[in-house]
Image (cartoon, rainbow, N blue to C red; front, top):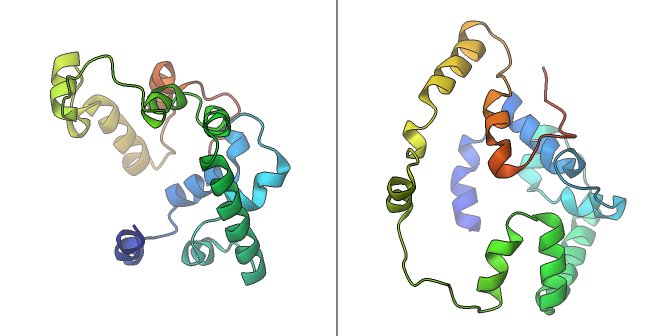
Length: 173
């Protein structure tokens, strides 16, 4: 995993989109339920090189404290299935019901497996590279033709699947 991210490092840039996503990561209250203040240092545990790109200051002492705290927290969470379920249900409520049966070793209701392409075909979804072409053209025209920020049209369309955008502050600039 470390090698994968190291290979990508030369391709990274502090673009407006990257800065927007970083704000989302560093301010999870924008997209998640109320997050306790005590989790703020943990939420800022992004790579040192990324913090430098974005001008985020965090000392080596803070890094060590956060690393040790995260290691202890993950050890505790992973050692107790009830705690594991509670934490993941709180952090990613839409994913927990899907992952917990696998984590608990509960067998699947069906032994049928499909590739993503097989499932997309069976359930009538476009493959991602061909999905939403009209919306993509409109967004491209807004961003590169009119030099406007992309609209929230795609996000609004996705709310039925991923939840609402309530409390999310759009990035500008």
